[in-house]
Length: 627
Ligand code: MG
Ligand code: MG
Figure 1 (tube, helix red, strand yellow):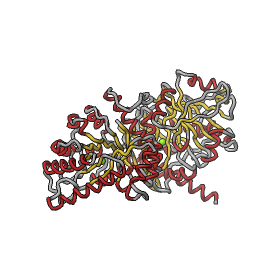
Figure 2 (figure 1 turned 90 degrees about the vertical axis):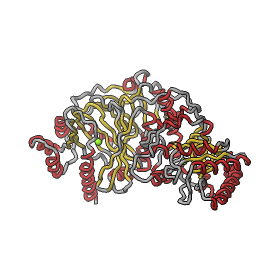
Figure 3 (figure 1 turned 180 degrees about the vertical axis):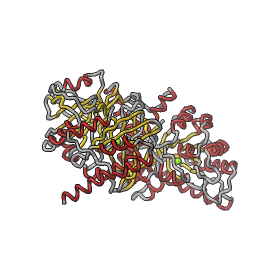
Figure 4 (figure 1 turned 45 degrees about the vertical axis):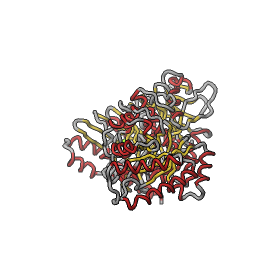
């Protein structure tokens, strides 16, 4: 299937959109009439621009309120169509897309619609054009693809074909079986869009909330599987009306779009086992086996303070990098890397972001295959100079310009700590921290769908339903992405308000990134005792929280007193239990969380608001002190 995108999906002027579409390696584009009308140039200029960029103008749209008009209005409708054909001639485009009539004046009747389409087909064929007909979910008489297909079938004209749009079909929950019996040469174009499940009218839902395949909740793969049965090989085009996309960068949205199509076709091939035209072999999504390490970019001046915190948390300095000012800290199965280099990636990251997590390294089965997949998905590979004999760990750019490294056990990457580091021989009893439980990343609201797609398309992870969390400064959207066995859990947070902690994090660290890291323990109370004995300051939890907890959950008084005395937050889900404690924020940037899970699968969403309020209070106190 030939991958394409409609200009309406992107921000900017038409020339900017075309440049972004070409830069994202699309070869086909649908031109939206509004983009053409608002463009400061002639259609012939657009034709030339597209040709120079190597783009094929595959369709011109939309043509509205055409079929089934009363006799007195009919001639006028055909005149309008001829004007569109004139424009298409200048554009050098041969396919006009019609969406089903929404006018209260239209009369309905499938044969009337078919007769109108047949006559239009005659006129189009005379000029060498074709016309595609689409059922809008809110069309007045034709709003189901089975009816638009019946109209096209009865029109029985070679210049008249069908447009299938996944959004209109899936939001109405139309059965998909009938797609299988449509002859593929009668389908002129397929438009794909996903969307979140929302309870609203089809028109508003479609005009504002469509998103790229994989970003929403519609059963797109079922739609594609039915389409695949027809052996359709024509254009597969993204037609996405989305306010966020139209406010974002055209270039990055276009790349997201192309990535989403490659991922969709890859899933289709995996599901059906059938060949998908125009899709190169892509290694499968990488199963994530855990986090190998988290790397912090830190200024030399602050590093001692941070290392004191790590010691307090029970980490020991396990190794020193052979050629760089980089140390390896370890506890249980957790590896942290502290980078205080004065050049290279971590250094420049530190200059722009301050003390921050500059890289995550994920354990996968096959790091080379993972990078191969990333590259095919248009992710951005990263390389930097390494010392002689040292490992060149494969990486791609992740959130906020940070890196995502991939290591595996089957290559020398599995001996990373021996090859690149010299052991210190230091050790320690630790504080009972075992593994990284989850990593929380804050980002701008507009970026959330981008990173959701990035993780989902590359790694074998699934998204949990989105949640909203109340921060004293506004609502925060929270989206969990995790592997089935929990070896990788990422919590993506975004807020539209400037005043939430999540937003403050963005403005203070100059961009998106890791806001907190949660370590797991088998016994939170014991761990908290260790931490306190070593002088680690925990986030104080307000008294009200425990009063409320007592009222909400049936909990023995002694246990509650222990929670209260140790700043422990608690949640219960059936018989599953969750215990949480937080460190104070380090250098105003990020903090650590310690969790104990007893069969619990969530993230204590109910407690997040309490934690955010406690942190907001600390920020305020710090501001007062610094005045
Ligand atoms: Mg459409
Ligand atoms: Mg957490």
